Image 1 (tube, rainbow, N blue to C red):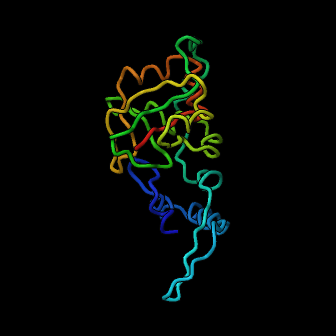
Image 2 (image 1 turned 135 degrees about the vertical axis):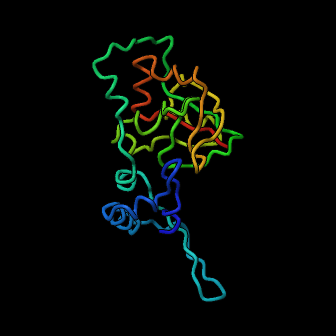
Image 3 (image 1 turned 90 degrees about the vertical axis):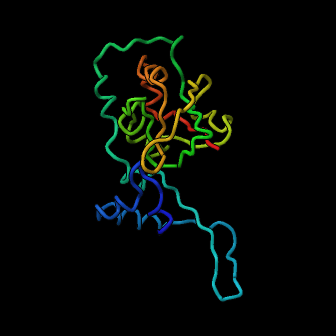
Length: 198
């Protein structure tokens, strides 16, 4: 439980902040943790203690109650004429965060140079984010193939942002591409975004 409480939820908060604010969130997280899976064998220590490795998925119920409201930006585009432009469209996005000191979070954001969210909770479908997470982290581009497809947009992050260094600033030029076509809005809605980290 202490490990879960310390996980970065957003660039500004940790999971414990949400658990303190809401009994529903606390009860859901605690209940889900009871369903942990043991990994490996117990290790019996000389001092009489036992070490046990356990595993629990954060996707599903936990993310479902922890994620902030989602999809409000996508709603703004409903009914608007957004060009379909396969030559300027992508199947997903890889953000190169290497060397920026970016920290993992359950709900990270990409921001433009003015600090406006250009990808994150406001841009995603809640059900998809609950099951897949808002982004995938990895140290090799090859890890992202199934998530970002065969033609991902590749951008270089400029710097980490937020109190917890979980958000990433990208150039305004890269930010504009994200909402420029219907196909790009779709890959954001479906959380087809990955962060390449050290």
